[in-house]
Length: 388
Image (cartoon, rainbow, N blue to C red; front, side):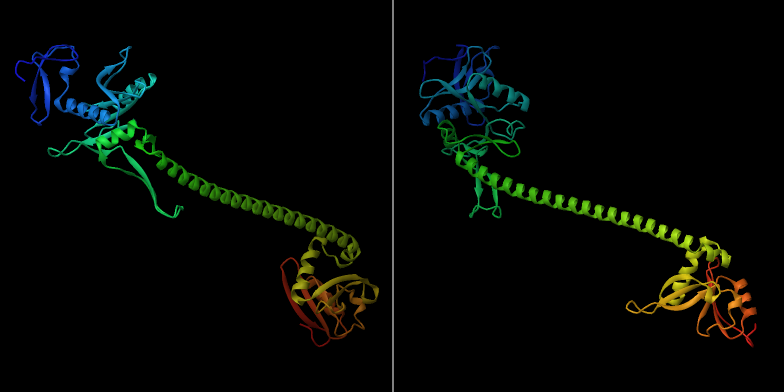
């Protein structure tokens, strides 16, 4: 309108209307002042502020541009007042670069005065994940609306609501007017997702996500409990196995001690026989092992028998249920061989004893030579007419 003089609300300097290269209608200063915040904003920034204020007013709220607090710690592009005319929400058109730390610091300064904030950008910014924000797109043509491309989300969970069905947070596209109305009317609120990304969503979606999270936590707890039970059972099995090994080792130790005692007692019992036979008592276990191995039967030692030339009687049995029977004599005195039974085997520990038996034999005899030193055994037939 010709003749109408316009003034900047910030510095009261004279301004004029014009259209930017991007077809945005705006005002510009006749002389740009150094200390006027409005003089340095772009037409796009100013247009977005107007869009935000218009959306807030369309939602039924009073909204004012460029309002700061008394302490001058913040200045909102658009400050929205509640029904009791108290400031409660700042809408910030953030088109210039800003670090995530700066965004969080400015958000905290608003929060200190009880004012929430929503940051609005037209491009992807590094700070949009950490503070409540919207990423918007301008109208493509005259008559189109500003559109929210990022920052609004819903939680989708396919029916039936079980852990087997898919669930995820998905972005919602809507008009900027709708998004601002939902935010100011508290139909949506800022929510931090599992990866700490902040977006606007309805409480019902958060409740649904909480239900899913509880199911997942319960399932995980069941898995953890099952795994802990498996670990406990495995530990019990290991402990039981270790105890069995310990008892087996103890049984072996006691058996070895008992065997050693029996062997010592047996050697003491047979000390007179060892002296008679001229045999080293330490070789007796090896000699008896050869006797049992070659016969393949259970063998027990008896006593020295004067009737058999003070030789040591050996008894054997072919099977478990049968009785022990005299099977042989160890180192009988050669003087007792005159009437020696032909089927009674003589056992000797070496060739020296074999020679003595051979010289005294008056009838055919069976001799088993079992050498405990060389571990060699041989069966000989000695007697008249059988001399080697």
